[in-house]
Amino acid sequence: MFAVRTRENELIASLSQADATRVEQVCERMVGVNRTAFARAYEKHPRQTAWDGLQLFLVGGGTRIECIRQRLSRRPWVHLDRDPPVVDPGHPDDLYELSGQPYAGEPTFLLVAYGLSHVAADIPTIVSPREISVFNPQLPRLELDH
Image 1 (cartoon, one colour):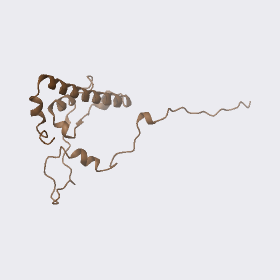
Image 2 (cartoon, one colour):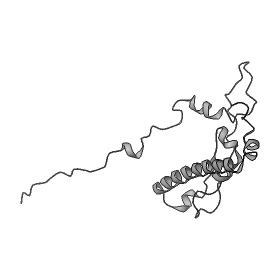
Image 3 (cartoon, helix red, strand yellow):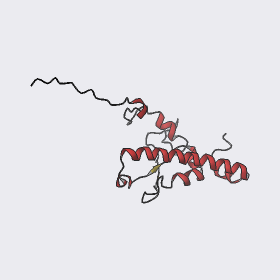
Image 4 (cartoon, one colour):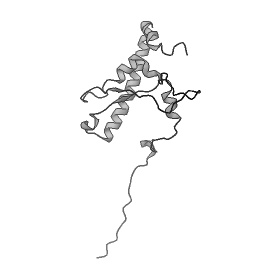
């Protein structure tokens, strides 16, 4: 696995046509998931102007793969005014080496683990739409008294 890390694009470029096609199919599936997520989010706030500032925040080693970055950085809906710019996730201030020195290396492979290490920090408790029961209010029955 470590022989591949940071060399993903180089290795993909050296694939046979059949293997390259399979990589493209995986990329397209990822883009499909992104489009589905966007469509579900858009249903919650269906005004195009609400999405004018849409930006793309990518974390994890897979985001270093150029075919994934390129496809995900295209607008997920053709009616958006522009492709979302990729936002630099930055470098956490509180990430340190074992020596106590601030971590100065490439954080790409650490950001997912770093985020998961902050259990529920700044993340509100949510439930999925499937977990919410159907709202069916029971209106009180009033007897006619006149």
